[in-house]
Length: 162
Image (tube, rainbow, N blue to C red):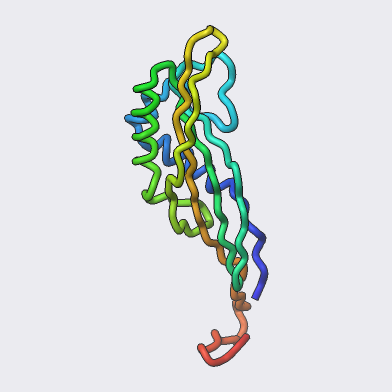
Protein backbone atom coordinates (compact mmCIF):
# COMPACT_ATOMS: atom_id res chain seq x y z
CA UNK A 1 0.00 0.00 0.00
CA UNK A 2 1.17 3.51 -0.71
CA UNK A 3 -0.02 6.71 0.85
CA UNK A 4 -1.46 9.17 -1.68
CA UNK A 5 -1.12 12.95 -1.19
CA UNK A 6 -3.84 14.71 0.77
CA UNK A 7 -6.19 16.49 -1.63
CA UNK A 8 -7.20 20.14 -1.39
CA UNK A 9 -10.49 21.97 -1.67
CA UNK A 10 -9.47 23.76 -4.90
CA UNK A 11 -11.13 21.19 -7.22
CA UNK A 12 -14.37 21.61 -5.26
CA UNK A 13 -14.55 25.38 -5.77
CA UNK A 14 -13.60 24.85 -9.42
CA UNK A 15 -16.48 22.37 -9.83
CA UNK A 16 -18.89 24.81 -8.13
CA UNK A 17 -17.96 27.63 -10.54
CA UNK A 18 -18.06 25.24 -13.52
CA UNK A 19 -21.59 24.19 -12.48
CA UNK A 20 -22.78 27.82 -12.29
CA UNK A 21 -21.27 28.64 -15.69
CA UNK A 22 -22.84 25.52 -17.24
CA UNK A 23 -26.31 27.06 -16.90
CA UNK A 24 -26.20 29.32 -19.96
CA UNK A 25 -29.50 31.01 -19.14
CA UNK A 26 -28.34 31.94 -15.63
CA UNK A 27 -24.77 32.80 -16.58
CA UNK A 28 -25.86 35.04 -19.48
CA UNK A 29 -27.92 37.15 -17.06
CA UNK A 30 -24.94 37.56 -14.70
CA UNK A 31 -23.64 40.48 -16.74
CA UNK A 32 -20.77 41.08 -14.31
CA UNK A 33 -19.81 37.38 -14.17
CA UNK A 34 -18.76 35.29 -11.18
CA UNK A 35 -15.86 36.25 -8.93
CA UNK A 36 -13.92 34.70 -6.06
CA UNK A 37 -13.72 36.88 -2.96
CA UNK A 38 -14.88 40.18 -4.42
CA UNK A 39 -15.75 41.76 -7.74
CA UNK A 40 -13.36 44.42 -9.02
CA UNK A 41 -14.69 47.98 -8.98
CA UNK A 42 -16.92 49.19 -11.79
CA UNK A 43 -18.25 45.74 -12.71
CA UNK A 44 -21.76 45.77 -14.09
CA UNK A 45 -24.62 44.34 -12.07
CA UNK A 46 -25.77 41.66 -11.54
CA UNK A 47 -22.85 39.40 -10.63
CA UNK A 48 -22.03 36.58 -8.20
CA UNK A 49 -19.30 36.53 -5.58
CA UNK A 50 -18.33 33.27 -3.88
CA UNK A 51 -15.91 32.33 -1.10
CA UNK A 52 -14.67 29.11 0.44
CA UNK A 53 -15.47 29.93 4.08
CA UNK A 54 -14.53 26.64 5.71
CA UNK A 55 -12.87 23.43 4.60
CA UNK A 56 -12.34 20.75 7.23
CA UNK A 57 -10.92 17.29 6.57
CA UNK A 58 -12.38 14.16 8.19
CA UNK A 59 -9.89 11.27 8.08
CA UNK A 60 -11.32 7.77 8.34
CA UNK A 61 -9.66 4.41 7.63
CA UNK A 62 -7.69 5.23 4.50
CA UNK A 63 -10.13 7.82 3.16
CA UNK A 64 -10.56 11.51 3.74
CA UNK A 65 -13.84 13.36 3.49
CA UNK A 66 -13.49 16.99 2.46
CA UNK A 67 -16.25 19.37 3.48
CA UNK A 68 -16.32 22.66 1.62
CA UNK A 69 -18.45 25.52 2.86
CA UNK A 70 -19.03 27.99 0.05
CA UNK A 71 -20.92 31.26 0.42
CA UNK A 72 -22.35 32.56 -2.85
CA UNK A 73 -24.14 35.90 -3.24
CA UNK A 74 -25.86 37.66 -6.11
CA UNK A 75 -25.35 41.44 -6.22
CA UNK A 76 -27.88 43.54 -8.10
CA UNK A 77 -29.39 47.02 -8.04
CA UNK A 78 -32.82 45.38 -8.36
CA UNK A 79 -34.04 43.35 -5.36
CA UNK A 80 -36.42 41.20 -7.42
CA UNK A 81 -33.65 40.38 -9.90
CA UNK A 82 -31.29 39.46 -7.03
CA UNK A 83 -33.91 37.19 -5.44
CA UNK A 84 -34.75 35.49 -8.75
CA UNK A 85 -31.11 34.91 -9.73
CA UNK A 86 -30.32 33.55 -6.26
CA UNK A 87 -33.30 31.17 -6.41
CA UNK A 88 -32.19 29.93 -9.84
CA UNK A 89 -28.60 29.51 -8.64
CA UNK A 90 -29.76 27.50 -5.60
CA UNK A 91 -32.03 25.26 -7.69
CA UNK A 92 -29.27 24.69 -10.27
CA UNK A 93 -26.53 23.79 -7.74
CA UNK A 94 -28.23 22.33 -4.66
CA UNK A 95 -28.78 18.55 -4.65
CA UNK A 96 -27.56 18.31 -8.24
CA UNK A 97 -24.62 16.36 -9.72
CA UNK A 98 -21.31 18.11 -9.09
CA UNK A 99 -18.37 16.22 -10.62
CA UNK A 100 -15.17 17.09 -8.73
CA UNK A 101 -11.92 16.06 -10.39
CA UNK A 102 -10.13 13.32 -8.44
CA UNK A 103 -12.83 13.18 -5.75
CA UNK A 104 -16.10 11.33 -5.32
CA UNK A 105 -18.88 13.83 -4.62
CA UNK A 106 -21.17 12.77 -1.81
CA UNK A 107 -23.47 15.78 -2.04
CA UNK A 108 -23.78 19.49 -2.74
CA UNK A 109 -26.55 21.26 -0.87
CA UNK A 110 -27.64 24.78 0.04
CA UNK A 111 -27.68 24.71 3.83
CA UNK A 112 -28.50 28.31 4.75
CA UNK A 113 -29.75 31.61 3.47
CA UNK A 114 -27.62 34.50 4.69
CA UNK A 115 -29.77 37.61 5.13
CA UNK A 116 -28.15 40.95 4.39
CA UNK A 117 -29.39 44.51 4.25
CA UNK A 118 -29.15 46.63 1.10
CA UNK A 119 -25.98 48.64 0.76
CA UNK A 120 -24.99 51.70 -1.27
CA UNK A 121 -22.30 51.47 -3.96
CA UNK A 122 -19.74 54.05 -5.20
CA UNK A 123 -22.39 55.68 -7.39
CA UNK A 124 -24.68 56.14 -4.37
CA UNK A 125 -27.08 53.51 -5.77
CA UNK A 126 -28.76 50.88 -3.61
CA UNK A 127 -27.30 47.37 -4.08
CA UNK A 128 -28.96 44.14 -2.93
CA UNK A 129 -26.90 41.15 -1.83
CA UNK A 130 -28.88 37.89 -1.79
CA UNK A 131 -27.44 34.43 -1.28
CA UNK A 132 -26.49 31.68 1.05
CA UNK A 133 -24.18 28.89 2.12
CA UNK A 134 -23.56 25.60 0.36
CA UNK A 135 -21.93 22.48 1.77
CA UNK A 136 -20.14 20.16 -0.61
CA UNK A 137 -18.90 16.82 0.72
CA UNK A 138 -16.42 14.72 -1.24
CA UNK A 139 -14.49 11.55 -0.46
CA UNK A 140 -10.98 10.59 -1.54
CA UNK A 141 -9.07 7.31 -1.06
CA UNK A 142 -5.70 8.03 0.51
CA UNK A 143 -4.16 4.61 -0.06
CA UNK A 144 -3.66 2.52 -3.18
CA UNK A 145 -2.61 -1.06 -3.80
CA UNK A 146 0.55 -1.28 -5.90
CA UNK A 147 1.55 -4.28 -7.97
CA UNK A 148 4.85 -4.73 -9.75
CA UNK A 149 4.26 -5.09 -13.48
CA UNK A 150 6.32 -7.58 -15.49
CA UNK A 151 7.12 -10.03 -12.70
CA UNK A 152 5.75 -13.41 -11.87
CA UNK A 153 3.79 -11.84 -9.00
CA UNK A 154 0.11 -12.60 -9.17
CA UNK A 155 -2.66 -10.55 -7.73
CA UNK A 156 -3.49 -11.69 -4.23
CA UNK A 157 -6.75 -13.47 -3.60
CA UNK A 158 -9.10 -11.93 -1.03
CA UNK A 159 -7.61 -14.16 1.70
CA UNK A 160 -3.97 -13.28 0.94
CA UNK A 161 -2.18 -10.08 1.80
CA UNK A 162 0.50 -8.30 -0.13
